[in-house]
Length: 131
Image (cartoon, rainbow, N blue to C red):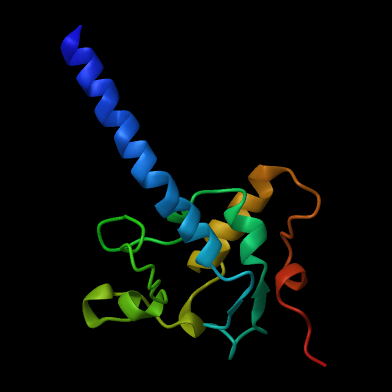
């Protein structure tokens, strides 16, 4: 019984300390972001970041080499900062097919699975036509 109470106390203490950090992370996150990694191929995407971090965990998109969210200072690196390293073996965006582009894999798949009518699944839903 005593071990159970100690374990419960530890879990509660961990949650009490973790909640402000999680709230600060969401509060400090940008409201909008421009994704322009493939701007030479398609127009940049104006990404409504705030709308998305209310729907899913940060780790759905942001990870480190260990598959974890960026460290406590929340300096979120760009995808290319790791994936363009020589050992990353990731082709340039212009060389990727639509089915291999990480944004298309993550975004379009999630949008289709969500069933939300407002979630774009076609090119011009995210990439506005130039002109």
